[in-house]
Length: 77
Image (cartoon, rainbow, N blue to C red; front, side):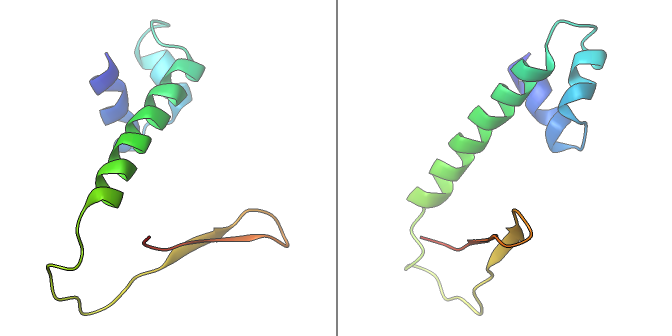
């Protein structure tokens, strides 16, 4: 069930939709926890990846507004 929920959310299904799609077998909160767990796993893989063994053309930074005054910037570590 974990892989099905994570795949569905990755393809754009909202976590609320997982509850409906699974006919109540997975709650909205459980689907959200599954997504967080998978996201942490993927982030861990990304952070462990070596970047000094390749030639890079550019560095892409990403971010987003959390509130009207607070901006979050995401950059490689």
